[in-house]
Image 1 (spheres, helix red, strand yellow):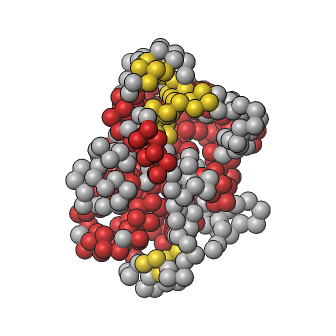
Image 2 (cartoon, rainbow, N blue to C red):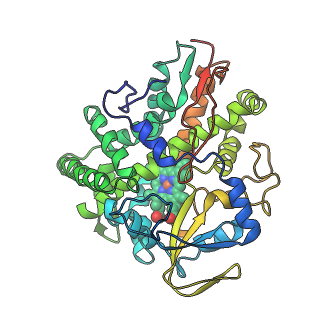
Image 3 (cartoon, helix red, strand yellow):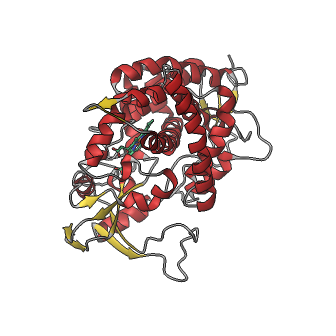
Length: 416
Ligand code: HEM
């Protein structure tokens, strides 16, 4: 397998983001029986973490979570996500805050609505249309690099570099800066693994973005940074200090999740060739295939909240201040809601899911993520005829307990 070190897919010498991503994900193949066991036992699991001798690996300098309540059922998950009075997002300040600064992810109302309204403008439908050309071109150039070969590993050669390149282009970053941008992005995302590295990357990225923002203040362009600078709600504009955290958040929120979700969709279709044939024959099935893959394998398994008061949830008492983990992965496979929840089935009735969260913080980039995945899948089907898993593939699988996706996806197809 070719390891990439740069978003342009060129083989690297010293730095290997794919390996780092695989490490962050953790090598857990199938956490779903564990989730099902917990759900059958209790709707809200309480565990004590971080005591001496704990088996959980943790960077000593990272903040320590000691008491954790995990929600596994679909209805209870939605209850927590849509109740931002009793369940605050301030929990995110503790985990990602020190690295990214004050992002909208950690804000509660009314601050959250105000800031989200400012940045949401940049994600409105008209702007998305404007990015379609960027997305098309990015997929095309990545596939061009291997279409003649008849074989590829779709993770390092396609799904991994794709969304980072899209974000770099949407932000209007010069192509010469991409290798540095990817190196720093990867370091930033690895925050729970290497706290000091992430803090250093955050500092360097801020310096880098400061130059870009200063440049766009002088010469407005047709990119997201320019749109953020000029966004105005109630006569107020974002300050540079408010723009940095948002730009930093786009990397983990927009690049990592989308790379993993499109990889999971490809994995689902390649391991269920009848369903792949059905989508190939009828592109109208693409949206439901995308939703089912999001439900079946949520790229991000958990989101965090903290209880603002003593709360009773599913018969379990959660004390004020406690850390609450909403298991999106478990909720999406709740048998109370989905028949045969472990099956990947693009024809199932109702693929609605909580993979993008719910309530006030529901993913701001979900339309972009869906658009990117649709463009990627269409291009794969158009340009890689006869696409199938490589029969020599060594144990293809999805893994991860924090993030989930396949580490590799070796395929064969009819060469162009
Ligand atoms: C399949 C891909 C994606 C998944 C699974 C995903 C998942 C999520 C989830 C679960 C949340 C809610 C977090 C919470 O409630 O605490 C969220 C929020 C967010 N996402 Fe995504 N996301 C994806 C793609 C994107 C993209 C492409 C972007 C932008 C480029 C993006 C930007 C954001 C932002 C800015 C927020 C914060 C919203 C707020 O706090 O109000 N996401 N995402």
